[in-house]
Image 1 (tube, rainbow, N blue to C red):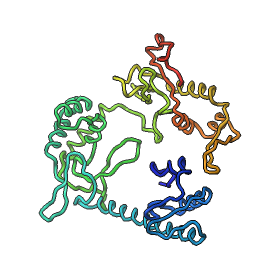
Image 2: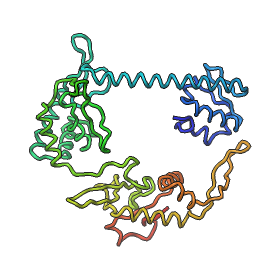
Image 3: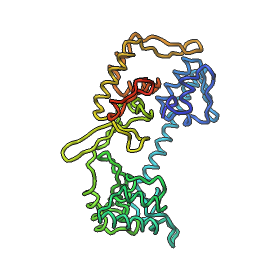
Image 4: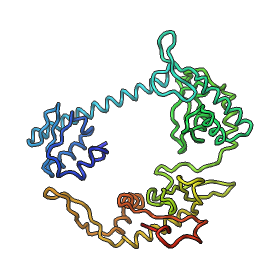
Length: 366
């Protein structure tokens, strides 16, 4: 991550520039990992009259030799970072092919132990095994995963944070057959898949909690009960997240999609209220209205940006309006601007629309 994007260092470079003259760091690889980032930092320091000082590297930006040396040290740091990444990736790839448990967190249902030779191996957690086998039996009888999750939490078998989604991921994990697994990044759903060895068969690292036949029977039962949810969108499913809030409680509203037969439904709901509140259908209509009202209020205002000049920040007019800027940058950037400005848009529940108050509690753009 470049220096200006880091949570603690970034604000000093963006907002607190007048407060320091020198940026001190332990070694060059603690500041940057890419030569391009160092070049940007050197240009920034020269423009703002700042210097870079390293505890263990002879860095000095007051001379041309110092700048050249900084670039060389940064190259070495980048090479070392790349080598470290290669070593870690190599270790994970090697561990995938071994029957012994070398690295990583075991799947639910297993824990680590030492065998007679002192090697780390996976063994079955008996309490978790009983819980998983009980869940399998109940699901085959027609029980829902939501009900099972509630029972496990009340019984103290699992922590209070157990959700239906987490329980389903555990029950669908091929690790329950004793296989080594890795994340399956296809399809937009968090799943695991078996790691295949050189012979094309799954790599087994432990005794199975279920047999292959029992596991497949469980997956078939889960598939019968599963709701066909749309795949997750890479950038999230809620447009204007952080801007749209429920007027009654002020909590962020999230987009949900469900399917019933051949028809699909999309609506906005609140996470904080029981049952999500009354909800608001037709999110696209709300998005369009939000854009229209924001452009009506701010679209023709001149867009100004902060620039650093003579030891202080000044606002400079760009010659464009917010409307022109958002037309070029898109909805995602518009959302970021509204969130940074603290602008929220209240959405009333559909059921309360006819009785919505007209005073300060009414749904409104604030």
